[in-house]
Length: 154
Image 1 (cartoon, rainbow, N blue to C red):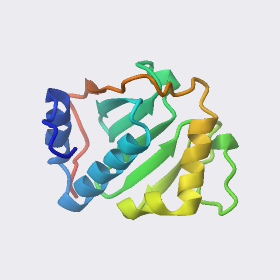
Image 2 (image 1 turned 30 degrees about the vertical axis):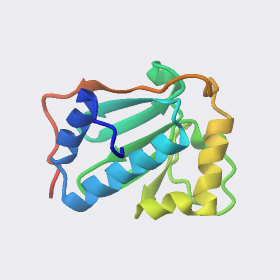
Image 3 (image 1 turned 90 degrees about the vertical axis):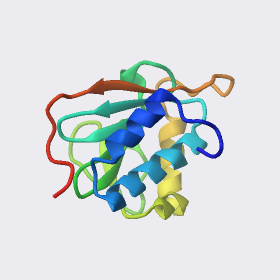
Image 4 (image 1 turned 180 degrees about the horizontal axis):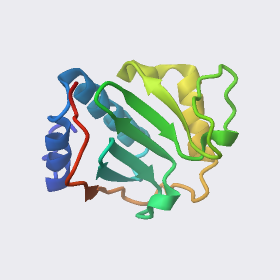
């Protein structure tokens, strides 16, 4: 992020991104960067799981308090609203049918500039069970890495 040297965990995240097709990696990298600017006080927890590479954004170190996440799969990048079921969605963007989580498939980092997506992100932050503390310093760290993973490129 800019001229600031990367932390060891940011470098690890970059190494995870290199496993993906360059276009997917760039969309994921840019999406995480956009949310880090929007939520500078968030803890960004990286999970390199079997199915996805995920960056979860939480107001603290508790994964259960996470509000948003960016998930990369071999062919897509999704923005997840971890408490999305009750969010106002007048344009019908949110996908999913579970009891809690909803998502949007991202096509470009410019999606974050769309008013309808911005409104959903703002609503998710505003209705977080644990509010984001503006006086807090956010952290970026790798939370878990799976030894076995699905192919990252198809």
